[in-house]
Image (cartoon, rainbow, N blue to C red; front, side, top):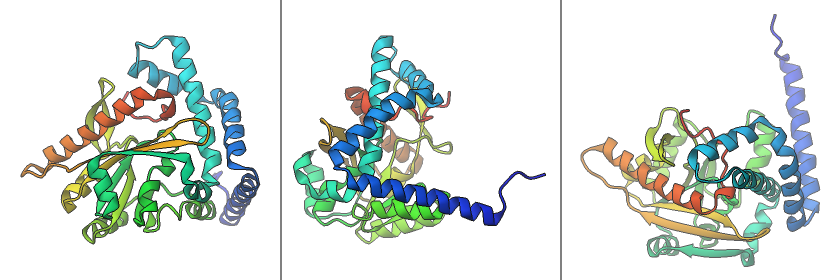
Length: 296
């Protein structure tokens, strides 16, 4: 006998979940962003270690950076939870954070500066570090209408609410992952548009790249799209400096285009992940070690 809720009950539960999220949204909007961020960071630091993902994060960090003493790994993962708590609270203030440019330092290479200043077609790829939601802020300030890709929530009401919070960042639209999204992204790039994709998540059907001395899976989508449309890739990150202040960095490269498409994609993915690893090693407490990035 099925234990799944009936359709009417499931609909009611989705509405209740959305209502709870809407209440949280309104409450956090009433609290200044600095206080909301600090409070949520404090709570996550104390409550998140009770979750099984805490042990997973420690395992991943120990395997990736075995040279670190146990006490240092414990501190890094505790700081990771603080950062993730801050990101959660800051999500409800994205529009306000986007308007307050005094909170940012911008460090980009010459190619990235040229791409943004001239609003050239490109593909931004980033990783879950600092407050990654704000990584495209410099491009948004220059009037670039970015099309983003995200993992849609099963609850369509909650999904619409969270999508709305990001509308100022992705004026080109937010697309749910899937075949339809891929076609639209190709069309966007070929028409001179801009696409942003997170590139550090595990992809079971992806390519294998070296990552912290072990094979890890990487999504080939960013490199495949950029190569197909002959546009540069900007690898970006956000570093949390202190509190709700950030440094946004960008480094661009043009994927190689030879007769061997698979080799080109492999090479591009390795370039991206080499940069990811270097950045994570610099600020290990700001990356999400809970990802199932490795096969084992």
